Amino acid sequence: MGFPGIWMTESGAVAYRVVPKCACSTIGQILYYGERGTFFDGDIHDAAEGLCKWSMEPCRPAIEEAVFDPAVPVFTCVRNPFRRILSAFFDKICGVQRNGRRYRGNLVPQVMQLYGVAVEGEVDQIASFRRFLLFARDTIRFRKPMEPDIHWSAQSGHVATLIANGGRYDRIIRTEELAEGMAAVLSDYAPRHRLPTGGLPRFNESAGHGPVRAHPPGAYFDDLALHLMREIYRDDFELFGYDPDDPERAAPVAAIDLEEVHRRLAG
Image (tube, rainbow, N blue to C red; front, side, top):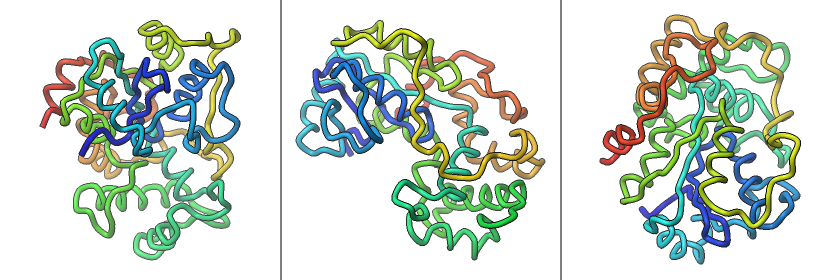
């Protein structure tokens, strides 16, 4: 399997396991700036220099070496599961992507037809989201009507691939505490270039793709939706310290126990 989802600076100074919908654009840009002294002009997911990525086959030997090098810090970033699934819905299901098309071709029409999700015109966002959540549960639990997408599959599954293949995280930071988390990551190694002062920049390539969320997060989750969230994201809530009972609470409620994460996700 190797180490899918790993990005590493070209200098090999730090390695990062990407978890979709968890500030990966911002984190990638910060790592890129540390190497080049400038931010990448465009979507960092398209960058073919400044970062080594597992998807680039020539980078794989260097990434494998770095992952097992105790001198190279390895980290990832997670997010409140309620906010992450809402973000995935508005971006990937309701939104039009950078190429001007719907995400993954026939995925959205299939969700509309099979689950009654509406994405155009005057939409009942709450009803459509709850139907999408049922679809997401079916893909994750039963792999029907398709395999789960990386943007709503469990964060623990993404995080686990590195652990299952013998790697180990030095830090797991959280989107809700991104400035503090990235400051800690940057203190673990010596970037070639310091970030400009004035606060942590935000890069969100999905902004503007979809409609604005019309209601507070809690409005989208009735009793059935809460049950589905616990069913499909139990490990995310437990391992990463989020409250499974309060969708309005974005902030974590417990510290992340790295030893427990490695124990639970080892195999």
